[in-house]
Image 1 (tube, rainbow, N blue to C red):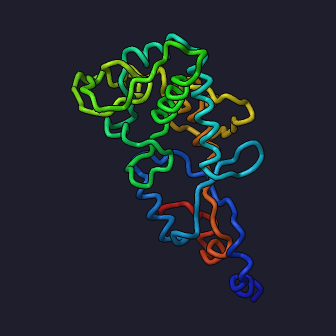
Image 2 (cartoon, rainbow, N blue to C red):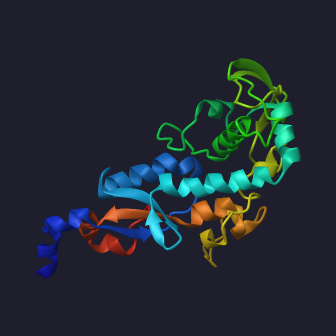
Image 3 (cartoon, rainbow, N blue to C red):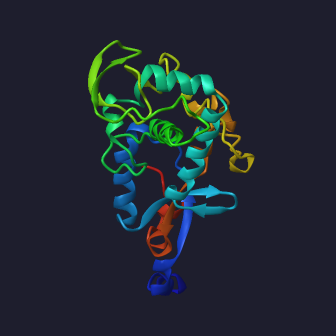
Length: 243
């Protein structure tokens, strides 16, 4: 029974293996985590990203995501002027997103990264003498009118944003669609991942598989402790399937 002996080896708890590419989760974020917790244990799985030939932690991969936004904005001074002069903050799927400054978001029903990247890049420009028009606005609360819905929300300004508008960065019906991650190219061709059979939403919008959204979703893998993987038995052939 060589397999039984292998399952008992303490060395395998330190070995992590990729077992599949999960793709976009969206509102199914918690449901996916619940499935993987139940299958491997909360300490038995994690996300990784395949970046330039190696699998790295999301906290490392997100730096390339942010860099794509940095280069996109720096190449479009008119867009920077719009953001800093007419907007007070940006969000993804909820105005409450403006309260999140970190990419690690265990508390949210859906992750949101594009608004954080935009806020971080604009904040950098406040301190960059090459951008004298981007000045420090402070981050006090203000009445911001949503440029899409017209609703007014009392929210903190993002640093460098002096306007009175609140900009949603989401779908084509949003005035912030230009900043949708499906429209922002991945800044390094080495980040691009091929997946001919994929049909996710971001592959039919913007620059499709060349986008930073495609990089993020198509590079994502689920890594599992190898001892937990071996313990799955027949489920090894479909470790990420929900049924």
